[in-house]
Length: 194
Image 1 (cartoon, rainbow, N blue to C red):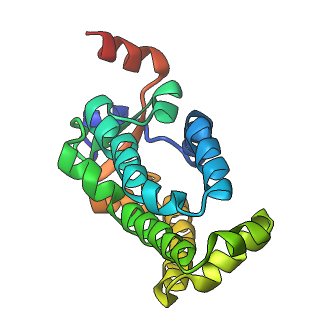
Image 2: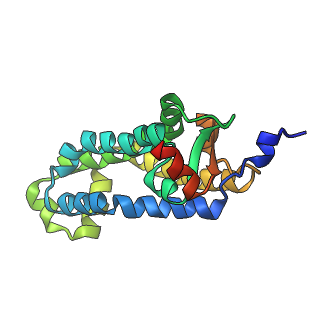
Image 3: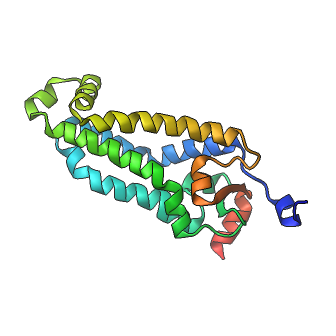
């Protein structure tokens, strides 16, 4: 029989988690837009941006989560990432939770950066945006294609897992030992102000 704490716990459903992900995309839009613009105008940008982008993503998905219990999109919708026992998420759990996505993002970005190194500035600027992306992928090391396939499989695996368990935990939640709780915006804001 479930404890009274278990009965009161409200797990975040699929749609609100999707909404929080979309809100995070809106929050990240300025950075992503600058990245896209610089990446289309300067061949070496992917090389110079590789480490700072990984640091930024680590800050956003690990440090912010460890500090506030959620990304900005989740906070806005009143969601909190917690340990399975309901306790506050730790830095270690946040890092484990994001580890697979981090490795796949790092590998994909590094592959494209190495593809950019294989081009000259003249050939880089000879292509339009879409053709340039295809050319970068062709010039990337073979493991870049593997990383891209794994990223797609990871996405669908996350989705399928979230839809097939009562707590709506995705694979990264199982890795991190976490759940996403729907606590309402007012409750979370009060907790952050104390």
